[in-house]
Image 1 (cartoon, rainbow, N blue to C red):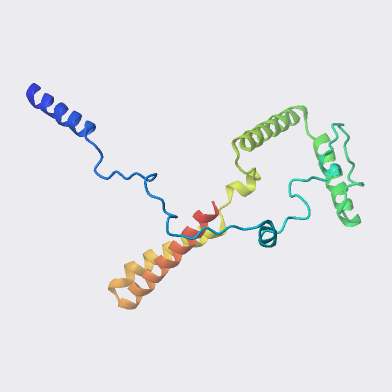
Image 2 (image 1 turned 90 degrees about the horizontal axis):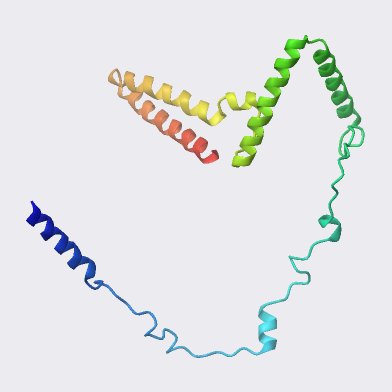
Length: 190
C-alpha cells in the first residue's frame, strides 16, 4: 500500500513538473508584418470620427442639486393628479382613518405590530436587491405558471388516454410542449 502510494505521488510530481504540451509564444510573431501601414492625417481622422457636440458626462446643474428638508408634499400639490384622483385619495384616507379610530386598543397594537413587520420585510428585501411586492401579489401565482400547470395536467390526462387511441397520445405530446413553453416563459421572467 505504501509502495503504491509513493509510486502515485512520484507520477503526480512528474506530471506536475513536465512542460505543457501546447505552448505558444504570442509575442514572437508579428501578425501585422504583411499589411500596409496606413497613416491617417488629422483631417481624415476628423471626418471619420465626428466629435459630439455635447459631452454625455455633462450634467445640468438643476438636476444635480438636492434638498435635505423634510417637507411633506400634500396630496393637493402632487403633480399629474387629476381632481378625480385627489377625491378618491382623500376618501380612501378618511375611510382608513375612521376605521383605525374605531379599533380597540389591542387591535391597534396588533395592527401596528403587523405594519412594523411588513415594513421590516420590505426594508430587508430592498437591501438584498429583491423587488418589493405586495403581500397579496406575492401569494398569487403568475399567469405563465398557471398556464404551464394547466397544460401539464391536460398532458398527463391525454397521455393516460393514449392507450385508447393514438390521437390522444399525439395531443398529450403537444400539451407537454405547450406546458414547457409556458414554464420557460415563466422562468425567463423570474
